[in-house]
Image (cartoon, rainbow, N blue to C red):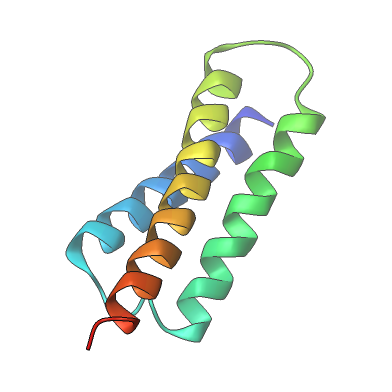
Length: 84
């Protein structure tokens, strides 16, 4: 399970990099779908991992950070679309 958790944290890091870069790949419908699936997979894996270790804590932080980025992206989109 730790290898899968590490893989998800790597995917979360790639998404963060693409978000900062404002990549069109991430903000396409395919990219947003992958973003949502990886974020949900992170929370599902947190339910499976019962032993508290550093990888579980790292996955918890990165999964919640993905939720924060999603909410921030929605807020930015709403604010910029309402501008004249």
